[in-house]
Length: 130
Image 1 (cartoon, rainbow, N blue to C red):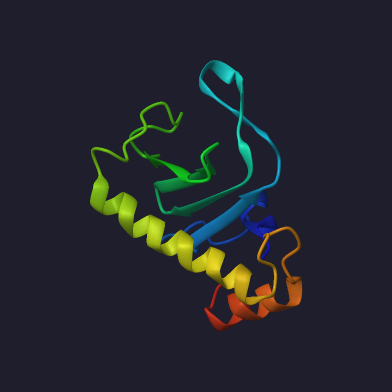
Image 2 (tube, rainbow, N blue to C red):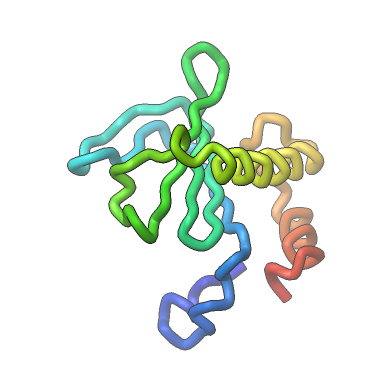
């Protein structure tokens, strides 16, 4: 999946609206409020659909912490809304779990080295890339 034409301004700026965009962070710090660095347990995952974004972080106890943001209302991600928007949070959690499960199906239970060919085929089958 290439966003190069979109970033150069020569692509369809609406091509990705409504489609989920996923990412995985293997780092151990994130940029927090006031540009402070905040540690977290890797890997972290996120899904973004339109202006809605959900991030999932591992906790010290082995569970997960979720953060939901409405980027249209809060582009700086300062107002975490998972408690006030539980239905939207749960819907994005389900999408994120499905994507993480697809990584597992590729034979990568630790999510460290997803098989790129399998991921491209999955994206192609879902219409995300040609």
